[in-house]
Length: 291
Image (cartoon, rainbow, N blue to C red; front, side, top):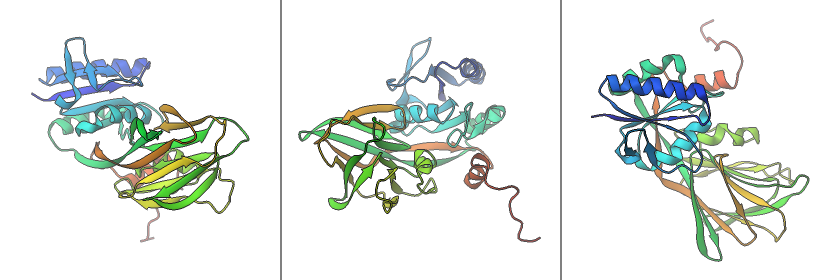
């Protein structure tokens, strides 16, 4: 029997109602369906009114919400390689690619095996304190290291595969995946990277040195970030803009490609370039070279 998990946006009544309708619709088709509200810090168990189904036992996950809901779901089930179909009930919708009015058509295609799957690379970060790993984090979009105090700068010493890159002085640093290149990285002046490329972007946030610019690095490298000097400044490592963790002087943050990959289901007629034109409001009608 096909098993589908439904994860819906936290404290959003329209998403809860749509999840319930979808669950009933799937069950009428003989599909085992469990629904769960997405909450930060959730375990990798999908709880339902009747029993529990572990994420590793699911064939698919449908996410009802915005990109933030999908990012949380990706951290929950991504390590199991479960394909995720995102239905957009939010704003931009770079990751939740299916409009709500096309949801059932897309799910029919999903159940028939007609949807293509796109692999997205993830990042992992290991935080070392006094030589011991105190936290391991996994993200689909980005890792952000930034300060909490206005009008102050921090120094971040960065090396790539143990070779010195530079000391970034400014408000902080973004390490983004191609998927996350259209998130905070874009707002900070970083490049848009095609989502299936295997590379990472290192983007300074408001650099004090104007010649500091974003740099694209291969997915095979290991990035190390340390605070450049001791300070009482509060500095936070944030994962996908959702989970935060305080770091201190002397901590080492090792960032590298995760062994886990996110599998995103693409709707029929999906076009990344059309998403860029639509979501970023680039120009008007496409240029026609024949005219």
